[in-house]
Length: 292
Image (cartoon, rainbow, N blue to C red; front, side):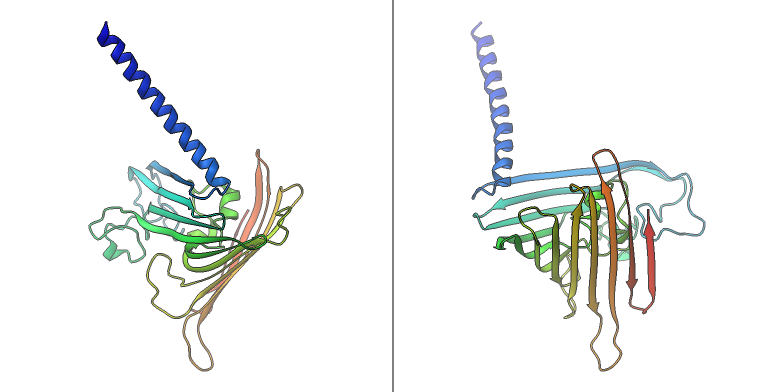
């Protein structure tokens, strides 16, 4: 009888501990969102697939699309993204962000990093976490604007078109497919022109252009984005541009820049719109792409 009572008490304590821990996590998340100093949140997510490729494009179109390069007839399980992040409020004015990521390889599914200089696999072919974001944010450096220093999300699409389309687990956005950086190391300003209503805003960043890799050139990548929201926050209009000089010499020099437009009507039930860009690249040619 005594043993049964002890087992019941231990089980009750265990349930109470789990419930209390879960509640503390919820409270901590609420505290972080409210900007309470000393509060933080641990978060993450995973998505992957079981796929079977029944047909391969004989013309080898698709470039860096998610499953380009996979042989016809292949089937397997695959984790395409694993995120593990921690955000922390250092004070009322300052917060920090750290994000570790393990993601699919590029070029698609090359077995070794030595054969895939743009890929995320180790030299032994294993997946590994890398530092995707590591930054400190000075909140309201002036009213409605934050200063962010460190490795951070770029203005290209992460906070706007990728969030609105909301299909990253299916496929990358059109600029992500062509590897416009989603994160970079530098100094950025993010804010709104109307802090009271948050209907008009901007996102500026000066960075190395090398993402998680150390800088190998003095030429910086300049990003800029402005956006507006209309019709009770249902209509979104966004204009993005970036620029990087590629060499420094008298007269003609190589550079690259992109102009991108995005418009969407977004409701909880349906989202529709268009996104298109023009990219002046190293060979001084234009690349155009737009999708409905």
